[in-house]
Image 1 (cartoon, rainbow, N blue to C red):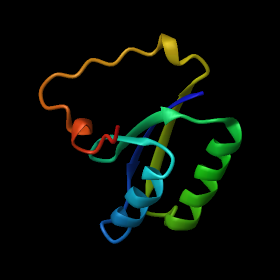
Image 2: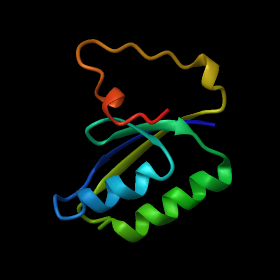
Image 3: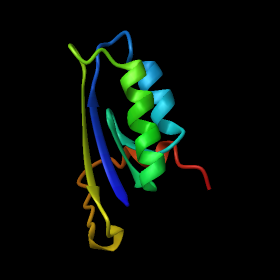
Image 4: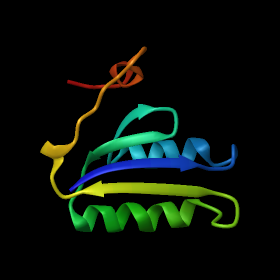
Length: 87
């Protein structure tokens, strides 16, 4: 399934969350990731995030779609994701 994940976490935890999510998804902008995950991988990502987060302070929003070909992305301005893509 196609995932867009947006997070807002306390400054103390940003680096840990960023490093964790880069293992599973593509970083596209500050606090925004996208990519394709299986249901099992998504469950693992959620579990890992819950361990890193303080649910009383932090927030994660996950948008998902079973069809990645119905997803359209338009970038206006700087494409920050190009800075970290590895071919």
